[in-house]
Image (cartoon, rainbow, N blue to C red; front, side, top):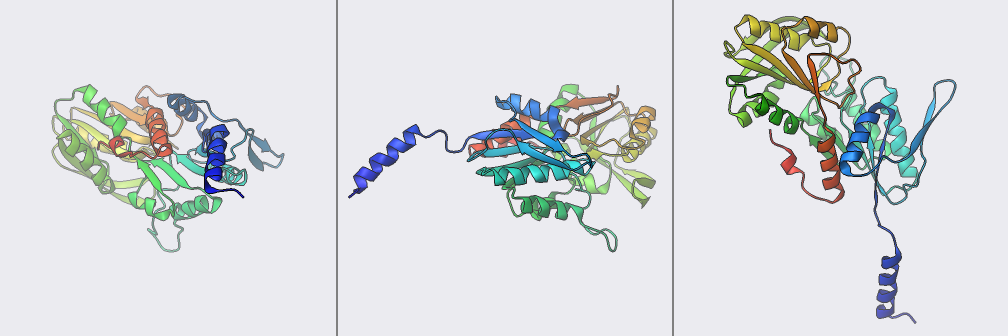
Length: 329
């Protein structure tokens, strides 16, 4: 008969010979290879081995080339177009769960479809909610992302969401510029909260651009609320897509007497006429992050990496530490 003392001794001996109960493994999809490699290096490890089997008709099947049994798996993948990037992430989550991973965390530096966070016209989809449902259905245990287009998207998930902000990267850079007459500007009314956080933290004035749209990606009129004459203006936004808003705002502010106009934007979507508009604009500099890889270099664009930030938060999430000190604005 096995007594409690015997069982305790047996249990302790088993624990001594067992490996780490919950090792960490970091993988990446095809959309974020370069950034994921930087994150893994900053964390102090290497990316896990995985591969994608592609069929002649375009169908693909991701697979892990090493064991993930009992591991906490972090999958790094931004979900910018094409939609295959999102679907690849879903398949990788499913594959990890079916391979007996203990926890699966989706690290999504750029969360695609975030602009579809509500019904802004009749009979349209709420894409952000659908994507959240798909990720949860695939089996994700946690989501880590940066600068969502709308904060309430966090509530679309039934799992914890770590919503990081690029302010921890942008604010130190702005301080290095030593702009004496700095003004933080919101490119539209929707960005007022974000711009206000920067202006309060830096203790500077704020301006707001008010725009009217006839249709998506087309602005019919814009006005500026606030004093920008003789000031060094920094427009703060979560993403730059066609660059219509920021270039029009920059031109308007220069017409109103601004000394210089810069843009800081977390996600450089930069589609359609964006590069041409940026080239022709009065913008001195556009500072972005590498949540989306910059395909075409541009003399006005400076890229700051989010790798160290994500690596630090991955470590804290894995070791159950608070991430509050990663938020500065």
